[in-house]
Amino acid sequence: MSSFLLFAFVIGYFLLLLGVAWRTSRHSNNDSFFIGNRNSNWMLVAFGMIGTSLSGVTFVSVPGTVGDFAGTGYKAFGYLQVIIGYWIGYLVIAFVLLPLYYRLHLTSIYNYLQTRFGAVAYRTGALFFIISRTVGATARLYLVINVLHIFILRDMGIPFGVTSFVILLMILLYTFEGGVKTIVYTDTLQTTFMLLGLVVCIGYILHNLGLSAGGALQALEAKGLTHVFNTDINSKGFFLKQILGGMFIAIAMTGLDQEMMQKNISVKNVHDSKKNVMTFSFIMVLVSFLFLLLGGLLYLYSLRQGAVYQGHAFVLGGKNVIGDDLFPTLALHYLPQSVSIIFIIGLISALFPSADGALTALTSSFCIDLLDLRNRPGYSEARQRRTRMTVHVGFAVIFLLCILIFKWVNNKSIVNIILELAGYTYGPLLGLFAFGIFTHRELPNTWKTTALCLLAPVCCYFLSQYSARWLGGFQIGLELLLINGLLTFLGLWGLSRPGQARPGGMVN
Image 1 (cartoon, rainbow, N blue to C red):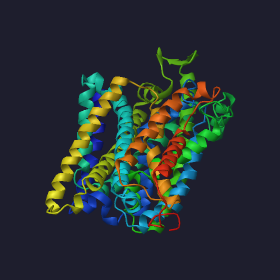
Image 2 (cartoon, rainbow, N blue to C red):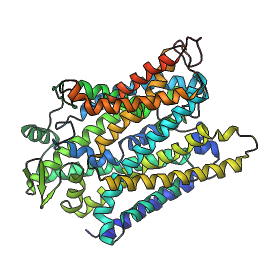
Image 3 (cartoon, helix red, strand yellow):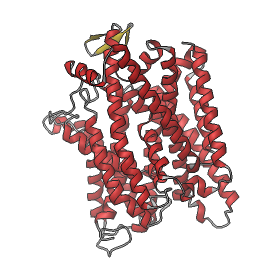
Image 4 (cartoon, rainbow, N blue to C red):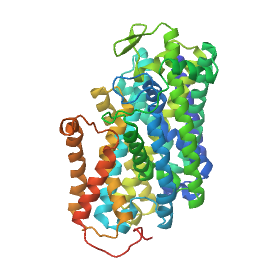
């Protein structure tokens, strides 16, 4: 298929987003950018969050895990173990964290740490969010930009750096004014296109293979591709590790993440916000299963096209297409042109929600949590707007640099990298919030709190690297996040002193 034709669809899609952004950002102000004037429709937020949570990583990487037995820690449908954990985590978000955020009328969720512990803990939490979201968002961006570059723009002679710059410029343009107010609508549009791409690809392959949904599951089961639970306790993919890790990843990467919660607390009231999270959680489980089903169908379709296993490789047309390369290769070279176009639209629909929300949330957190922009004396609405725009552009530049670093490192299994990095960067946030919610103790308002939160991930790194040697073959998987949070919690206990009940504490 012509690279120029596919690129034309990318440009057309961006122009559509720009039109939506222009429409929704009229008469916007700083409150529109930060929290959507607390007037977002909960149904739109719930639906749009699907696209933000799944992103290009799910669209490209998750289908590849079904047959990627060489390094994911999963077997066949084993990724469902993590999804089960996610669903449990969303219950905690809906019934523990959201009531807390609404009761304290938060714009930035890290204001909770200021209310509970003081300015140092507050800025420490915001700093870890900025690090976490920057790394996670740019890893997701890298995966999709790399696919677009390899399969479309490289043939047009466009370098990877230029591809990255242009796509970030697109995202910057349509988030520049409206922020959250715009993203609630653009994410809804993009989630629709992403799910359309998923359903069309599943439907075409089922039709081509002459299978019903039930027949497809039977065919996958016959090849051992529907296995879910890993019972090897020493494996990183052991089901209890995956479920427990998934639960705390959902709590940390959604409930303690300003990007995700910024949209939730833009809903009118806590009751609607709870409905948003619970609706989102059920849809998330269903959509994740469909992506795994698609992965299984892609392997069946590949075998029909002459693919063969060679050791740990899965070779089609002389190329190893296991993992992240499977879906793009088949969609753009082995499926009809119409399906290829739908794949590209679905892919960029998965790209933009994970990037636009991150860019907006990072700008909001930096301006509110670190600069305290809205309370600065002498800062008019216009001056706040200029500062916010400067920060917004600055984060776009940081995104570009991080994407280029990922390209240089050239890691293949992005979904696993993101989950592993989350264990290190979100652990201190988990420890800080848990310590604030479940104890009445007070922390010193000094650099020691920040230093301890930096020390915990370092200890976890060495524990993760040497766990098999120290623990008789036991490998640490996704439970690293829980261990990191627990080390932070224990360290904070050692630094703290008894205190009285405060807003957001255990008895509130």
